[in-house]
Length: 172
Image (cartoon, rainbow, N blue to C red; front, side, top):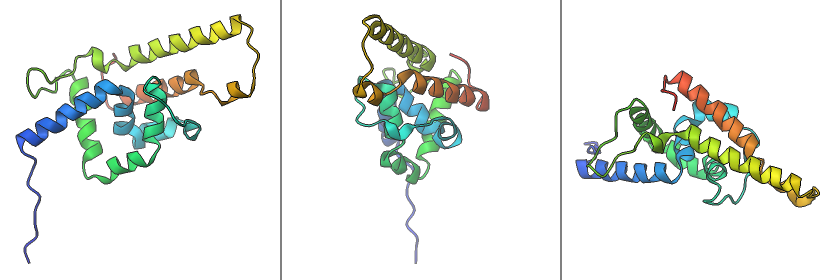
């Protein structure tokens, strides 16, 4: 009995997949890195991930953490080669080799600058925190349920520094 072999993706299928990947990275860079290096790095660093629920697009780090610790990640992991494919494209990009499909399909160095994005988010959280303290807001039960963005940002930074060291990525 002859075994049916899957044919390799056509160049247009590969092009579509890369375009979808680039769009996903532009939408949430944190998620791309977390998926690509989750098992080896992020799972060993990130704590209290189960406390994040119902994150929104306005909370990209929390959304990435929630997504990458849900059943959605399982689909990536169960799809042969998906995580390796994602990682290989992030590593290509980090090595300074653009992922080029067509002239309009590539990522700039700024679009992969997780440090600046994370720093901007941390600064915004610190400003909001200082404003709350300045207003003398009392701590109530709702505050206890708020996500500690600075804590998660610190863990994400630690994980990415480990990824940079382990995979010899350039520092942004």
